[in-house]
Image (cartoon, rainbow, N blue to C red; front, side, top):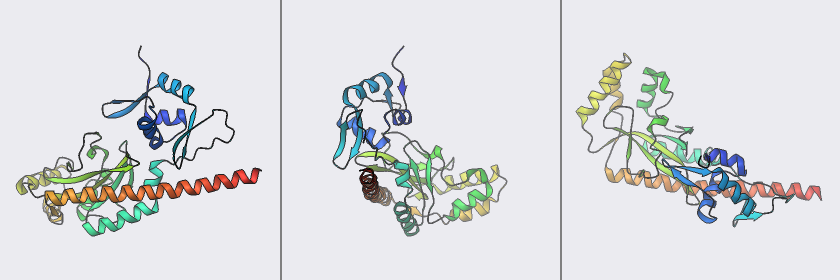
Length: 268
């Protein structure tokens, strides 16, 4: 039988580090990992051997530092990416951006779990869809995400089965490691077929015994974007949020370090 493969969450528990640090160790320290279906998996025996050879790891300002397993002051300063992505700084940024471009925006972690749901502008079409189908709960669902390392930020993500109605997906990075996704929409691409979209809306309305005229009227509020505008939107928002995430991460890390120093000083 082959070596047992652990998920990222299982490795986080095993090594007591968050996934950002683990992904950094893969790149810089040869931490054992392999890609299976676009997701990281970790051979358990190799991970245990790596820990035995290298010792435990804590995160420092200058990068990963190997420390002894018996270090009595081994304190983890790791912060979950999900916690940072829900920070007031990120949410405020998304609120301002969503009102500017008139698109609803959601944030998902790397596994497709929603972290932030339309913190600012709530698109009328999204609100109407929730009224006719409460099970949606939101315009955004996990099935809209393309959880694939080969996904490009220019590729629109289709909303349910309505042809021509799109959401844009952009990656979020910290320290060159992808930690989540931004999804924004709805919007219409410049090459969308209006009749195809109309047919999809009528089918959706019929499925939920809703007014097709009402749904089509709400659809008229959906903005049309050119391919160039789509590339600008996804690239710009990805860069801005990723940069802000780095700032939030460093601020949170600094606060944790100060608190740790204060606790250690109190024990002297």
